[in-house]
Each structure stands twice: as C-alpha cells, then as structure tokens.
Length: 315
Image (cartoon, rainbow, N blue to C red; front, side):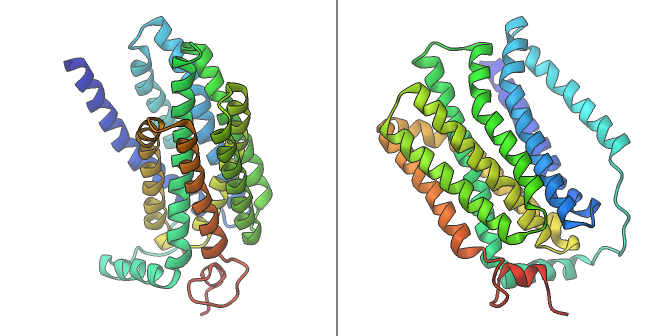
C-alpha cells in the first residue's frame, strides 16, 4: 500500500512539473517568430511532437515494464534531463523589446482583454478542454476494452492505442502547415475537425465492433488533430505578446482539466450503456463545434469581442 501512495505522490509532482513547463511553450513559439505563418506552422509541429510522445509512451512503457516493472519510472528522469539540456543549449530566449509592465497595470490589461475579447477567448478555452477530454476519454475506453474484452496487453495494446494517436499526429502536422496566418481557415479547420469527431463518436454509439470502433477513432483522432493547432494559433496570434503567457496558461489549464476528466467520466457512463457513453461524449463534441461556429468570428470586421478586432486593434 505504501508503494501505491509513493507512485501517486510521484505522479502529483510530475503533474506540477508538466503544468509549469507546457504553458510556456505556446507563448514562446509566438515570441520567437515574427511571421504569423511561421508561428502557425511551428504550433502544428509542437502539437505533432506532443502527440508523438503519446504515440510512443504506451509502446515504450510496455517494453520497459516487460523488462523490469519499475523501469518506466526510472526512464522518466532521464528523459526529463535530456529535455532540460535541449532547452538550455538549443532554445534561445527572444530579445526583450520593452520592459515588463508593473503588476497592477498588467492585471488591468488582463481584465481589459477579457472584457473586450472574452467572447472568443472563453470559447477557445472550452474547446481546448473538450478536445483533450475527448482524446483521453476515447483512449481510456479503448485501453479498457482491449484488455478486458480482447485480451490485449503490454506492447501489442500499446501499438493499437498508438493508431488513433498517429492519426492525430499527422493531422496536427498538416493542419499547422496549411493554416498559415489565415484566421478564417483556422476557424473552419476547427469546425471540420469537431464535425469529424462528433460524427465518429455518434457512429461508435451504434456499433461495438472493435474494428469499426478503431476506424472511427482514427477519424476522431484526425478531427482532434485539426482542432488543436488551429485553437493554439488563434489564441497565440490573437493576444498581444505582453499578455500572451497568462492567457495561454489559462488555456493550457483548461486542456489539463479535460485530460483529468476524461477517464472518470468514461468509467461512470460506461456503467449505463455503450450507446449512452458515446452519445454523451459526442454531444459534448457537438457543443464544442457550435461554440467555435457561433463565438469565434475572425471573418467579422465589427462587433465587440470579434477576433478580427483582437488581431487588428485600432490605435
């Protein structure tokens, strides 16, 4: 029992570390490039790399665990050390062009951003959370089904779990490369991605065949892969650099909330029925699609809180 709580405590500390590191990535990318097209492309690569880690983790974790059960835990500090060294030696801090604002003025600026642009910001926050909720909900479901119903475990299960993640990975890369600085295209990539995810999840609700489920999850993964870099680009390019770190930190927090809610919600809904589970999470995906359609309006030149207003402020 003591070992269990030690592992939980370690995971708690690991979560604190991840929460401190990941939110800095999006604003850093935005600060390192002056060209919006390069920012969007780089954000697509970031999401691709992030997902590629998820692709490898169940496979490498199973391989290491098959060798010695605690070997995955020993590998994590080594990987973290490699990441730290790469950041220290390869990531150069962007040159500061102005002094940081005083805390009171900074706080007033943050409140001003939410007052004028809250309409689309809140929508992007919720969409980011829902996207990660969908991803980890379906991965938890697939992992559970593979083990309990189909007897797959270890490396083989890791390879199957990697299939929808690989789909997400490829979609993130090509979406980031395609959207450039076209804000309208960012929105519609998000809409199409959520439409694909919603349709795939509704489809799974009708059929429980593992091959059909896996095919739908590939479509769902591709849909989420279209949403994430588009949302990242909209929020990174829609906020001025001085405030970007705080806003993207809130966005990252919403994504982590989605990650944490996915598995317990699936566990609860799965007790009802397979159809109930997937109709509910498909409905949540549909809510995200409606939000991006209604609340995010980069094509609008007028109106308080419009994204065009945020990206093209009047001086």
